[in-house]
Length: 185
Image (cartoon, rainbow, N blue to C red; front, side):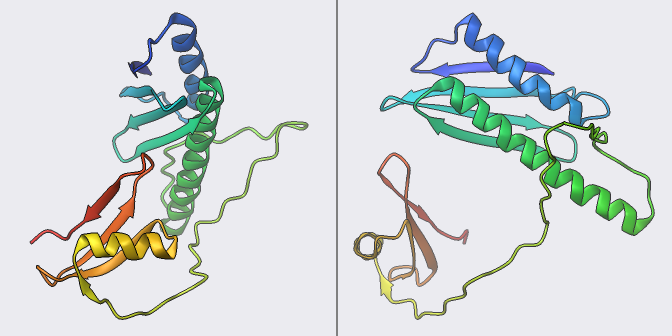
């Protein structure tokens, strides 16, 4: 894998670069052949919090994860764990689909299960909806929707835009500001 490591508000030193490459290269064990694509790593610091984003574009799959932590090295470890879970989940889906269709196509190499090795997590592909709500969407502007969202203590709020009569969503961003999601016309 080739690495493209960038830093925002942070100088990417040789030890940081080595640590990132060492940790992310451990993902290669999940592939029959290592991906030929570039691994994009963005490291940044905002309000004393270290943030890392990793994107690995591949032919039939885009692996992407981001993590925030006070310690940069801990954030790197957490993002690699997240990527490993994504790979295992995708591998399970691909292998299940291949067995159902009878095709011996495997995107990922089989993990070796050695005695004394860390137990492999069993992840399910099934998505379970545990709660369902129905409510009337009151026509309002985005400012009123933000006030309603804050009043309820939620991180997002669905409403009907009074100007366009379309369903919109306002949400609170991690930086404390707000975002608005509108459908394309």
